Length: 98
Image (cartoon, rainbow, N blue to C red; front, top):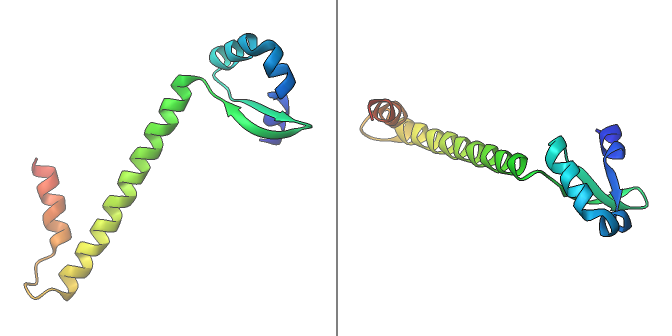
């Protein structure tokens, strides 16, 4: 990743002078452009499509994590519950049915 960052590092001064070309480069290459000074990255310029995909992936991952947490909670309730019903299996069955 370090090589990639150096290859696409743009100084803030260059960004001010050539922002149109740098934005076009980020858009057409679909690779991030790192903005920084003195070799230290401070920001990243991404193609909007790439950004939207990353946001979508993060949302899906968060939803999966929330579902797993709820599933563990339901399993604990089933183990400690008085009815002896496995709520986690019930919810999985219900989700598949609908």
